[in-house]
Amino acid sequence: MSLWTNVLIVTHVLVALAIIGLVLLQHGKGADMGSGFGGGASSSLFGATGSANFLSRTTAVLATIFFLLSLALAYVATKKPVETGGGGVMDAIKNRPAVEEKKPAAQEQTPKPAPGKDVPQ
Image 1 (cartoon, rainbow, N blue to C red):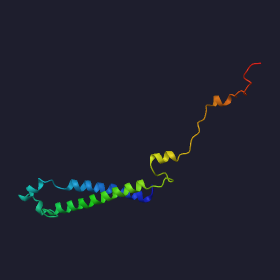
Image 2: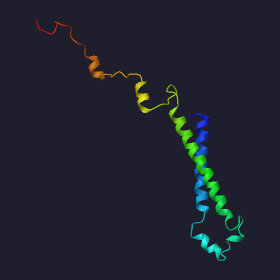
Image 3: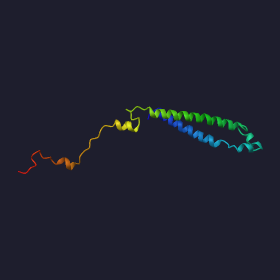
Image 4: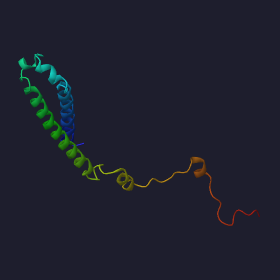
C-alpha cells in the first residue's frame, strides 16, 4: 500500500474512535429533565445546554469527516493500477502466467516405443 493509503486508514480509525467517544459522552433525552430541577448540570463547563450543543456539533463534523474518508478509501481501493498488484480478483487471474502441468517422475523416465516397433518379430 502507498503512504497516502496508510494515512487515510489511520485517520479513518482515529475519527471512528473519536465518534465513539463523543457518542458515549452525550446525555440521553431523559438527562435534560433532571438538570432542570437542580441536577447540577448548570455548573458544568459548558453550561446547562452548552455541552449538548458542543458535543452534537462535534459529532456531526466528525461524522462528515468519517463519511468523506470512507469515500476516499473506496476511490483509492478501486483505482490501483493492475501492474502493481491492484485491481480485482479476476484481473489477477487473467494476468497470471500459465502454469504447465508436470508429469510424475516415474512417467517421464519410461521411454515410448517407436511407431511400428511394438509388434514382436
